[in-house]
Image 1 (spheres, rainbow, N blue to C red):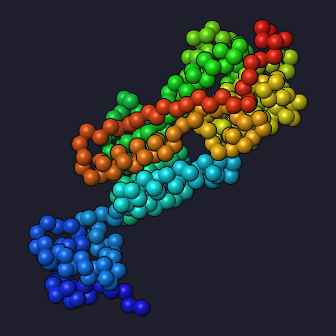
Image 2 (image 1 turned 90 degrees about the vertical axis):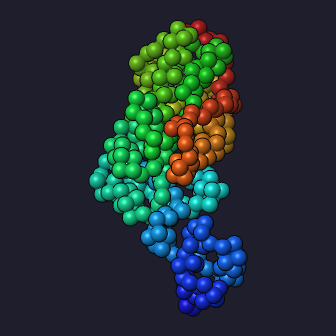
Length: 351
C-alpha cells in the first residue's frame, strides 16, 4: 500500500505543499479555516510526517533517548525495567517518544561513539542516561557540544552545566538507617559498600560513616567490605568479611543496595547464621524482590516514579527553552523496617 505523502494531503485539502508543511510544523501564519481544513484531511488519511522532514525543518524528532550503561543484570531485571517504563511514561505525557538503548560500558570508545552518533545524527532531541560514573568524560563532552542530557545518580556541585541535569537519592539515607539500628540496640554494625565511583554509593557510604560517628560506634576495617551492585560480588564480599570475624561478628550489616543485601542473605545461610536472629540486614532502594525474600528485607524506599518524572520533565523543560530549570534534585526516601531487622540477641548486644 502506497504511503500517503504531504503532496496528497495538499491535493485533498486544496492547498499548496508548503501550506501543509506550515500546518504540520505548527507555524502561526496559517488562516484558521485553512488550518482546520488541512488537519481534517490529515486525520481522515491517518497521515504522519516523516521524521527526516521534521529534522530538515529544524523541528527535531520529538524523541527522548534513554541509555542504560552497564551489562543487563538478571537479579535487578524487574527494578531496571520499572525505571525504563517510568521514563517512557514521563516522556509520553509530554508527547515525546522514547528511543531506548543498552550500552555495556563507556570505557570502550566504540560505545561512547555510539552515543555520540545517536545525538549527532539527530535521532533524539535530548538524552536520559542511567549508570554513568560520576567522573565519566562523556557527561562533560555532550553538554559542551550543546546536547541536553539528564543523568540519574550524578552530582557535580563545583561544575554546574545548564545542559546537564541530574536527579539523585537522599544523601542522609545511611545515617537514618544507622539511627534506626542504634535505636534497636545495635552497637556493632558492618557496612557492605557499593561502587564508590557512583554518586549514590559514595553518598550512602559517607552517610553510614556520619551515622556511626554520631553514635560513637566502632569503625572496624574487618567490618567493611565491597558488595557492588550484583548478587555475586556482594555474596563474595559478605562471605569474606563474615568468615574472617566469626569470633567477633557484627550484629547488623548495612548493604549499599537491596541486591547486595540479598547477597548477604546467601552468605549468612551458608555460614549457618540466621537473619535477623544472628545478624540484622538492611538494604536500600526497595526493589520488588526486597519484600519477597524470607525474612522480608528491611530497606529504604525511594520514590522511583518521582525521581524519573523530575529528571525527564526538567530535561524537556530545558529543551523547550524554559528558564530557571533546577539543575539537580535530591529525592527523599522512607525507612521501611521489615523482618530482617530486630534487636540484637541479649548475649551479644553489649559484646
